Image (cartoon, rainbow, N blue to C red):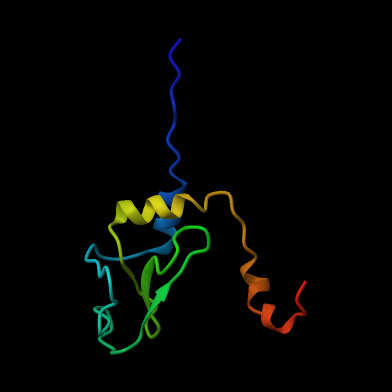
Length: 101
């Protein structure tokens, strides 16, 4: 009996939903200026809960474009770790106004 194992593509779906453009990556430090809008000192590291301990990719605070820190393959691998997790982002906006549980 031969069993076919289907690889999950949830990490790739998450990656595609992030709409990260380009293939150039900035591994250690973000770019000094956004390659899309040209603004300086506006790039922030984005952490994804349960995916990677640290910044997984970069995002411009001005235009919102996202940039790779790692290769697409590595980013997808880290994002796949979050498959099945649910975070209520609407509620997270006001979490600092709620008492701790």
